Image (tube, rainbow, N blue to C red; front, side, top):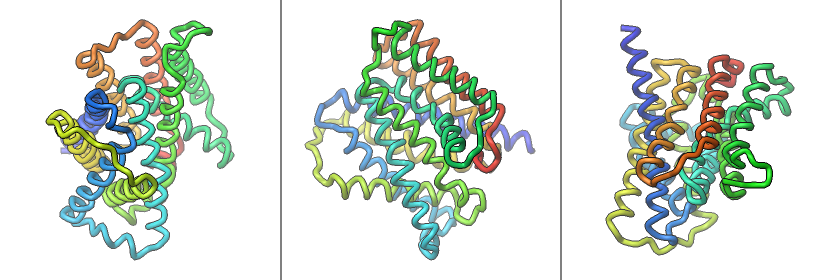
Length: 304
């Protein structure tokens, strides 16, 4: 029975990470339809609709999502998680996809754990372990290979892609660090934290930039938007939250590798992305480095 539950958890998280990778492909297809479709518009409505639907799901699930507002501190933590964590994860990622492709955007976002290590060293005085330093050097060397194809006077990836990719990776760090105490104590269900975080983030983005672009009313737009909302947001977030009942955080982190893998394979098959030896080698180095530090996990309070 225990093995069956672990297998179920693994299936859930692999599906979730694969679907997150696929969402980048839907986004790239959407951006290719019309230049009026922006990363900001896509992020706003993905967050708002996804968050609203997940609040409903958490309510049907019996998690009492509105009880969180009885505690002002918890409400502010979830708000910060949405604005400082989810906004860069979502918006910066889509910007990297729009400026480049889903493959490079996902690989760069995969660097998030190394920004967590840097935060711990700078602000919590927890020096990185030797394995973490080695893996960080390996991962950023992988990015260097992808960006330059091994030539110091050449950039194969635009500075804009690198900038937004690194911002999305920083978002992965804030996305992990901000709600960790709340999730570790279990006083607020993870599904509720995610649902309100998404909704708060979307509302803030809409308030900052309420002007909406003219979106072409064609079937391709709505198919891609539906794919991003359902396949790229609601299903994977729900599966990811559910999977943690059956597998530990370290195993979950290892399965994250399916996100850049699915995004890369999809980019090659659907968008004729040409992968050079440098792209392949650099991506392998990044994914390998992140997997290694997850095999040798960070302190317990960060895993949660």
